[in-house]
Image 1 (tube, helix red, strand yellow):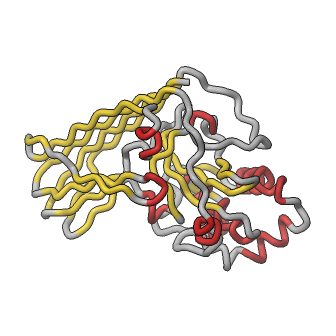
Image 2 (cartoon, rainbow, N blue to C red):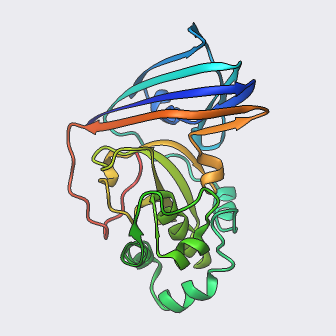
Image 3 (tube, rainbow, N blue to C red):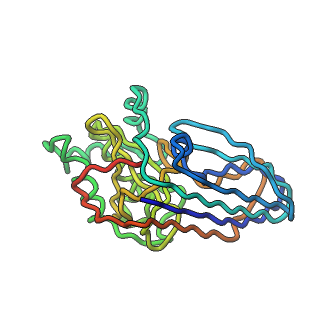
Length: 267
């Protein structure tokens, strides 16, 4: 499988700001020699080289200290084949059981236990994915950046990050370690950055995508964390910058059928 992804951002920086970008594919693709990528960042007509910070699970944060004026970013990557699943650590298995800002697993525990009581662990991933997928409607623009899993369940609608937050919160309530992953998603329509859940079962992390909008085998990992607070594609600090335009593309030479009952790893 060959996968290609691109991202184009245009920003208007209105006061000097620190921009933290999580757009490049995760470090394991580069370590495996599977990824070839290009970056072009221009501020006020001048080329800018970002500082790269490597965080947990191979997430790469590119930091730009931007002055007032227009800033444009173009990123492209081609990945040949799939890579091995990333490492599982004992700390991760505890950390990703805890409630977090957007995944209020403690508040949703009564709902999770009432809906999924008695199900074996092997059935939980598919059951939770199907439950969330049938109870929410995918409605662009229907949620706020501050919405968490509880509000999503009450509203019964949202976008990919809302679906993923609810899946993560329910699984954590059931003592299944779960986390959020930002991905490039070949086959996604409408095309954008995509968010999915990743849950631990049978010794590995497996993808759970209740939206079923893209084949899980094609997904390319960008960033991984507790919830969207760890995986935002753009964070602005110490100043102001407005996103003026965004364009994302992701294609694969094969778009396989995706059976939600099957376990799939990101690779």
